[in-house]
Image (cartoon, rainbow, N blue to C red; front, side):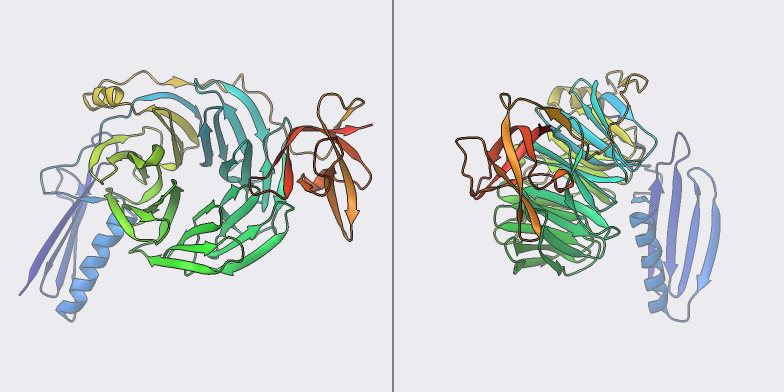
Length: 462
């Protein structure tokens, strides 16, 4: 008669670590659970066949690892908690925060209350926007910063006032988005992916291989997506498939570098895939479901956040360098910039973590800085989206644009000298009025040519 024992522990909080033990002997499955150090409670089920017992025991262990955040360990060894990460400062809290972006200009975080904050790298708040629906993601496309919301709209945050840059059907269930050279890629709850051009017009939409597409990344002529069945590459121009790779579990997050994709999955692993072929290059094993992942430039270090409020760092070949506790929830999103890891968490916190070698070494020895909590009392009131424009009476300090009718559509062109008048301009639809002229800070040509992109504040020219 065969026998198998699986012993799991969960760190709990304080001294409240919990255990869960599954013992299968032939057709009998006995589960014992409770606080570590206590006898716990026991229940036994006698199955008709040993095969049924094997399946039942495996299912119980799987559920505890995947959904209960338990980990396997030796009985009596304990798992404890990883050391506290060296958090430099924390901001926010209260509503789950999915949206996050950081670069040399600062960092942006958005939560399910529709609040978007822009902060300097020292944690001081420089702006606050109040969007009408929960923020799922924040992405950058060169100069432009976009926030994707649950109302099916994508807002341009590049000026003083948020403007609707793209508008999808309300209730479509946007999970993630990315923008590349003005082209929007979207992944949806139902597993579909879609591309919208710089004029906000749908180019194509198609079903992926699975459901719940939590990942989309755009790069030139390629669109990469991840869903419950794995990762695929599509042609950005028409949505035709290039390759698809099936993974052992659902994709929960995706990041890209020049040549590689980094894909976080429900079954505790980050995969590095080659962007040209989809070939699996490296696997980075974590101890719980991976909510988010990112990398230092060119993948020299890979970071991951799990659903047990821990973060990890690996070298590029997959060796785990460290695991630390966030102290402020699980990282729904993360991004690395200049020796710091920024995370947006399940508690609504934006945290800035020092991930330099010196800081991590000290943290593993129990020495961490006192994290500064950013005061919310001094945060400015949120600026809401609006179609009302300030006016300008002189065209001396900007570029002049004009709205005109093109059949049933309204378009924008540059009328200032030195620009190609045949090129249209990417410009918010909500403020377009045929015959009106506008003054913008500037326009830049799209990388691939053919149209301009307005940036900065918009004023109506009188």
